[in-house]
Length: 359
Image 1 (cartoon, rainbow, N blue to C red):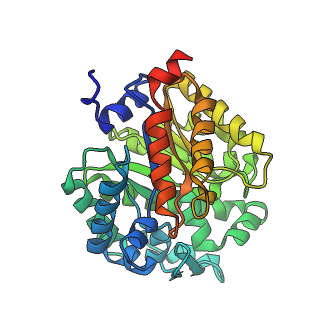
Image 2 (image 1 turned 120 degrees about the vertical axis):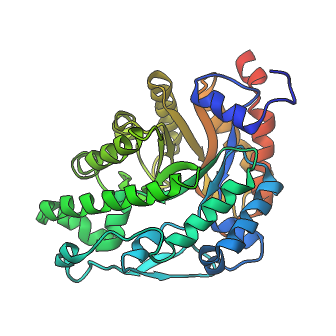
């Protein structure tokens, strides 16, 4: 394929096929950052789909990422079931009242919300539809909330962790409910003709041990993946924090791509080891690894620091193909736009395969 003809879609498709285009595909994980860049408050971005779409398209034009995502926040599913969301001017929305915190027996009375009518879910679907209709040249996907995080936000993270010891049957009941809920939202999203990704940040081994993942989370991840596989839809997962203990489990589940974060408390050499092991495993099993430029520095980093992070990731992967460069997690709402530009500039130059494969 001649230089200049290669598109963002070509790059991403090549990565998923284990092939090489012109360079490593790259994108930051952008949600509220796009809204703030457009002069919106975080609450406006997360509640007004018309403004959110305009902000996301402006973000796309400015940075030209190789993948575009429909993403507002990770509280919308929990809010639609009865939790209360708290907004801030500086950080992403959070839950400050958990629907099952005081009485887990309420689970038996809850019904799975209809994404087309409940809470802010219709607004999110409107956002997905509008971005799909915009037909940007890059592949487009959504960010839905995974079942373990839905369950944690419904119950309360600390209490749910205790429940895994004191009342495992309840945890399984809640996970069955949350998984069916995640499927229903996913069905509505794929109806807008965009890709499907689940963010399940609280499934991290920074919060729960690998044994907890295998007992209480993995079976429901498998159920979710197989449900959409039967519909010929691949699913991607993002999990924050330390994940190297469960990389093989995540691959076994059947996710088509796995985004990894950084554990800021760990030895920095682990950042390299996690990425190296996941990409090696992904290349062997046909799974794409996505990550993991340290997003925590994007409010204050110098150009040299951003470029060093990009080089770290690309050098770690080396001459292996099933890799997409991305941030380790969502961009901070108040990230420095220059940092985002520096990341994409560095990816376009340092991520060229003619340079990588010639080494």
